[in-house]
Length: 248
Image (cartoon, helix red, strand yellow):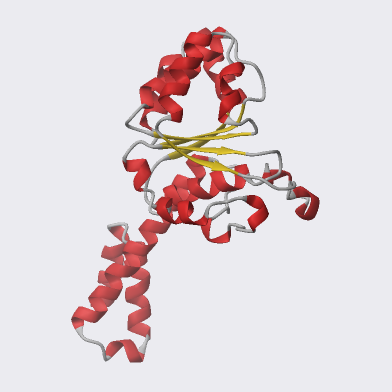
């Protein structure tokens, strides 16, 4: 009876994982031979692990990564792709996010830019940070709509709170002055405090030509480029072998 009351109390306190582990211990003869400290440690570990896993799943859902199951452990370091394994190793602990540093991932279509960006996004989520994936054109459209329906300020506040924003497909279209200013506001709000990953087909040397307003171009490039780690991917498109559209 006392055991059932304990189980009910654990469930009532929303310690469901601890309750499951306690029930398992009651039904396991080998576990009963363990010390109180060992059994209690197993209870706490079960609850802690479950909460961490639930938190990760929530963060991944919010992140909306284009390739949700991408992970740094599965990266392809074949020489023709020019992916710097040493740099990945230096960045895997995600300390760069704490420092508000950025990543720039450039390369031709199909060379794995989106996968690499998603893999870093996954790793950052595993460290407990908030991540959000956007295709640049979609984000700029949302900001334009925000000007009209009054949601712009809220969206900007929300963007400022995210530890890592992934901007994919940057440079697919020329940016008019309004879109350029919106992008500058996003970058400016996050500069030095929050991190951004930019994935693009264009080398950094051609970014200035994307902006109709050269003054805004200078401001954005100054805040992004000089605070970034860079990956320049090369090689043939992986889609030829894998037929995966998500490997852009």
